[in-house]
Amino acid sequence: MDRAGKAYWDAAWEREQLPLAVDPTRAGLDNYVTKQFHELFVREFPASRDGLRLLEVGCARSSWLPYFALHHGFEVSGLDYSAGGCEQARRILEGAGVSGQVIEGDLFAPPEGMVGQFDVVVSFGLVEHFTDTVAAHVALARFLKPDGLIVTIIPTLGGSLLSLFQRVLDRAVFDVHEPIDRRQLANAHAQANLQLSWCHYFLSVNWNVLNIASWRNARWRTRLMRIFSGLSKAVWMLERRGFIIPPNRLTSPYIVAVARPLRRR
Image (cartoon, rainbow, N blue to C red; front, side):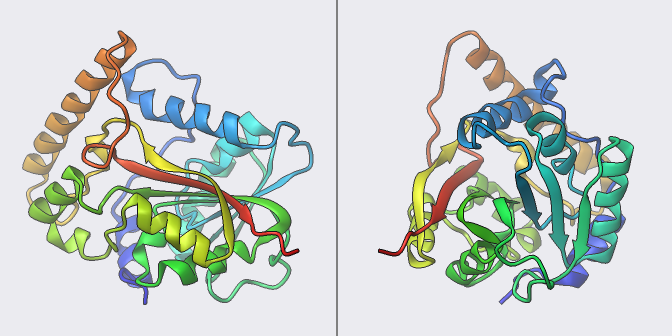
């Protein structure tokens, strides 16, 4: 079951401003998280990427698709079931001067010609919106070539401070998520016949992940998110000075899993 549903996302994307394409070369703490993800992708992606194809599933208003093309050389495609979200993703690609294909379609009913066609499949905050996490990963893996790579990124909503704050501050948003911890994500990959190479909590903190979109008072919503953003930046400044907080279940904002299809003997 899809906990959110197409109507939820159509409404969400209508009220959101179009984001800029991700650029890891931008300076400043506002780009700290992007730089950390960039280092992760550089480490995990194939060394030679010429002619390789990358698919982002759940690509509505994706600011990452141009990044994957410009900074890694992939031929990029996106898939999402929100028509408005797809149109926004196309506009972001166009604004970045990147050619790419964005297709409106269902993860569980792959459009013709997409099955088994991609070297890398990436999702940001997708699988935790489905009650059957295993089925979501089985569906994602269908897009991969036999030796392809799948990267799954979800918010840490299983037994974390982020989970607690999200539940208290905006229960409606929390309820469209399945609260998954690292062990559960790893088990879902195994049950989906995916061979994990990496599955860990990622970053020490990022309170910007909190979503209080249901708050009607925009002024208070903005004020609170500025406080959370400031707390995150204070930690990042310490980390830049060598005071590193290891990623952990309690405070880390993300869980990242990197896997490949299990090779049958």
